[in-house]
Length: 156
Image (cartoon, rainbow, N blue to C red; front, side, top):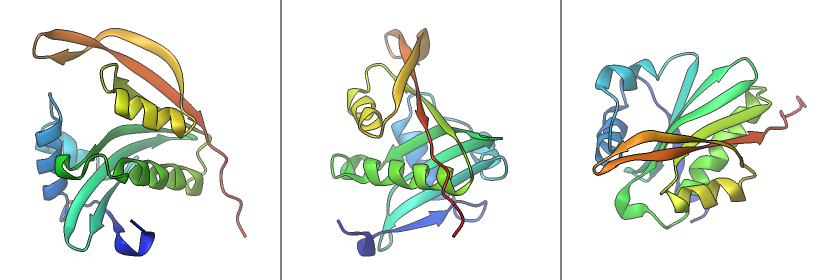
């Protein structure tokens, strides 16, 4: 899909509902509505990805000084495998650059091999593993902590 066919929208208190519905659909242990809406103001930033009027996915990030943490990223299940996760991640990294970040961090379930591959391809490296971090239906699983160095954009 070329860039002219999709658009990004900053998430705010008046337009987050579809993303929160998606969040509840794809997360095993979703945030509450209050937590989700709390993540729509500083130090957080969040964007949704759309094609025409269709929500494709979103991400939520938090910036503290020069470090940004990717708190949540999701692609609509019917749209997975079409490159939208990569598009969302590229937009996230671009926002990190624009905001002067030097590092990006994330955590991912060890079983989410598609996401881990996506992050590796975007130059995220494994920093550590947190054993038994996530709940799942039959127990727990580990979290993989990943980090990427960011080169801030220079002002023209």
